[in-house]
Structure formats: C-alpha cells, structure tokens
Length: 130
Image 1 (cartoon, rainbow, N blue to C red):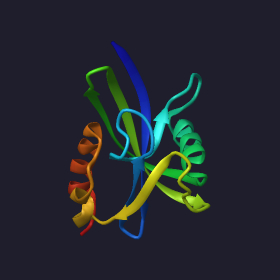
Image 2 (cartoon, one colour):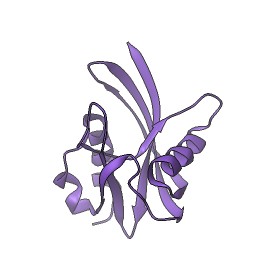
Image 3 (cartoon, rainbow, N blue to C red):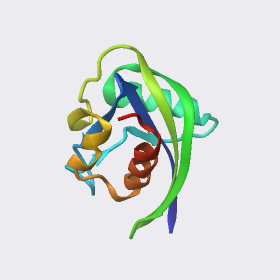
Image 4 (cartoon, rainbow, N blue to C red):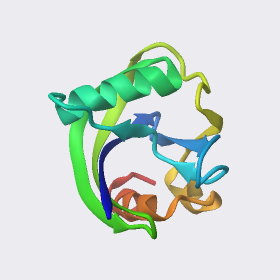
C-alpha cells in the first residue's frame, strides 16, 4: 500500500481558520486544510510554503507546529504534519479548490471535512479561542 507524506496549513486570521473545498480527485467537494506532498530534499515547512503558493497564490509563514497525524484510507496510508500559519502576502485565490471559507471555532462542524482532517478539527476545538 502506498504511503503519502504530506503537510497541511492551519491558516489563521482574526481568530478564524481557512478551510478549502477540494475541486478535484477522490474527495471532490469535501473540505480540507490546504497543503500537499513533500518533495525530495524539502523540509516540511518549505513544502507547506510551496504548496500554498501553488494552490492559493499567497505566501504564508508557518508559525507553530500543531500536530502529526496518520490515517488509513482504502487506497493509501496518509502521514500528515500540520502547522499553524499566517498569510504574509497576497490574498487566497482558488486555483485548485472550488470554495474557501474562514471558519470560527463555532463553525468548525458546519462543513463536510475529509476524514483525516477531522483530527485537526479536534485539535482546533481544544486550542482555538471562542
């Protein structure tokens, strides 16, 4: 079984987090934290900055390691490192996603998350301010 090593950004602004809706693939129209695969010779932080630039055309700064998670999907095994981050330049543009929303803590359950990302939601429910 294939193992995917990926990173995800918990992008924060005004006590809200950015959720993106997948516009492609197996989980199309489900919500996720943006990010992607780590390339060879790339740090996790560098991969995250590159992926957000490619997906949302903005530059982020990872501010804090949040959590590692692992999830078994039917066709692959996922290892994901998640970082809190802030946007340092640009405004998110939907280049690979078909929607995006800034969610407060009370809105975290309002969207249909990709299964692995529910672990991040649990983390945010414990760490975000109301």
